[in-house]
Length: 496
Ligand SMILES: NC(=O)c1ccc[n+]([C@@H]2O[C@H](COP(=O)([O-])OP(=O)(O)OC[C@H]3O[C@@H](n4cnc5c(N)ncnc54)[C@H](O)[C@@H]3O)[C@@H](O)[C@H]2O)c1
Ligand SMILES: CC(C)=CCC/C(C)=C/C=C/C(C)=C/C=C/C(C)=C/C=C/C=C(C)/C=C/C=C(C)/C=C/C=C(\C)CCC=C(C)C
Image (cartoon, rainbow, N blue to C red; front, side, top):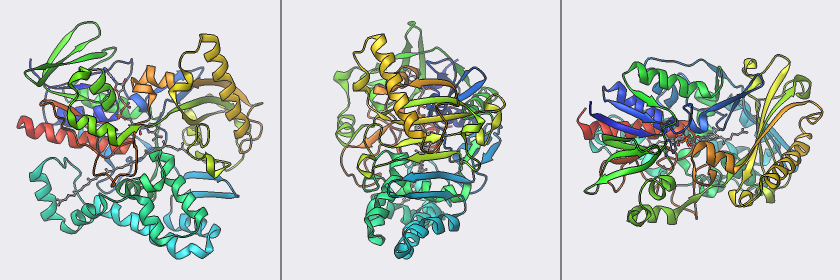
């Protein structure tokens, strides 16, 4: 039977594309190089612990509005996922005693922040209220492909003000808007951290549309943890995909996208097997897609331009720990950010991110124990060219430096450690198939908001990209949007 769409990779971007197409009765095949689906939203099990590999703070699992794209993607193929509400998005432990919690309740968050910056009360409210404006524009409209003129026309006639609002914010960055209202340098550093901790760049380089989503949805749909672990989202999407007649093959590593007369017509696997399809979708990063799966000499001009504007963000050093319950003081929150010196916010091993999912779902660890996932940015270069012994020693040293720092918020961590597994940029590259283990693309220099981020079609007819190297970038809810948009464009192209 002819395959309508072959999707390379089962990250959330790839799976949302596949399920959306399958729901429209397209014949879909997903090819995944690893043993399970999910990519960065996958999991692994060790000694009774179920660890999330990457994604841990989940947006898009809310129940209301139009921006709850994970919930919507699941229900489109008749599956659902129980979600546990996280009452605090992040507990920040920042320099100069700036210790504060981002409460799920908007007014409570504003109060917590204002308590540290009384003189900026008005500016704080004006900045975050403006983020809510962006969110309200998005949360009113159907979110589909911006490459489909008839859809654009339709939403424009249905919601002209929301569309004009979005057009206004598309070229803007959060830092410019923050500086319009806020003068205090320490508060501006805090806004930088608010952006950096998910966009990996400071506020000046973070698109306002994305900041509007994150800073508002956390108080609207909220951050919600999937019962059973983050890996459940992908497992459920696969269940829905199969129910809708789609197929997924594991240990199916695509090594080549086949081009005939300038058009993508199929793929070849590492084992030599060939599949042909009417449309090919790559959920691999753009670097992997255009430099590994296609001949480098033929890289399209617009991809070269994209690489001049965007670079690979660093990868992470990840500590997956099992710890005794006694390590966590009463009232500990699920997510923490630790930084001791503002100058080091963007440095390797500067900011430490922490997620403790067992506070929301205790079933992920043996009784009496918790999971602490701590991660910090790291570049692959430092991990190349080492012997096995050197690699292990470097991992050990780096991990203990992080544990020592975490003792500040979790006294007794070292003594209460029951299990430790350390992942490096090499681990991310190997298991996620992402060049240099990168977290995703970041602007090389200040760009105008999201204007330079490509949509799903590529310069090669028949070939589409989905995932975090397409509009609007990193984040599970963001790549879910990219999946909705990609499937919409393909469905129109196939006349479904
Ligand atoms: N919320 C958080 O805390 C957090 C943390 C880390 C990552 N994330 C997010 O996760 C998102 C990643 O989603 P995504 O959908 O873009 O990508 P992904 O990297 O998660 O998924 C890509 C999938 O494609 C597979 N693949 C790659 N090359 C292949 C090949 N040649 N053949 C077959 N399969 C191949 C990989 O194994 C992987 O399963 C990012 O946006 C990132 O921001 C979130
Ligand atoms: C018609 C006319 C004229 C016009 C039109 C216009 C329009 C319509 C426009 C539109 C637009 C749109 C649709 C857009 C969209 C967007 C979106 C969806 C976005 C989204 C976003 C999201 C995001 C960004 C998210 C993110 C998140 C993340 C990344 C997270 C992460 C996290 C981390 C990493 C960390 C954690 C932490 C700790 C652990 C502590």
